[in-house]
Length: 145
Image (cartoon, rainbow, N blue to C red; front, side, top):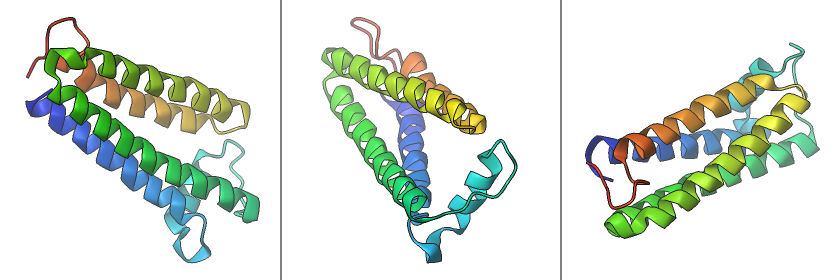
């Protein structure tokens, strides 16, 4: 993957990593402002969400996982790009991993009263899939610019 699609995916990784920092910030009262606003907006009940110790722990871990996800997608994409057409199996595994995240995370979001998170997940997965599909990296023998 080169050109526009590589830049797109790199920016996607940066965005996910920054979002991870926001979530990680929810673990600590002095740095929870942005996460608190996002969580309150996503809560279907409209009531403010209390950031008590268990929720801070969960959000902090989600932040760490989001940062790790961004770094892993970046590393996988870089490795797959270096392999050219032989990187197709890596691209396929990256897509499978992202689709697994999407289905599980969105299902949990809807089941626990946070359907707007499922909507944001949908926007995130579409933004991820655009350079993968448009870049042609999963087509046999083809790696488009």
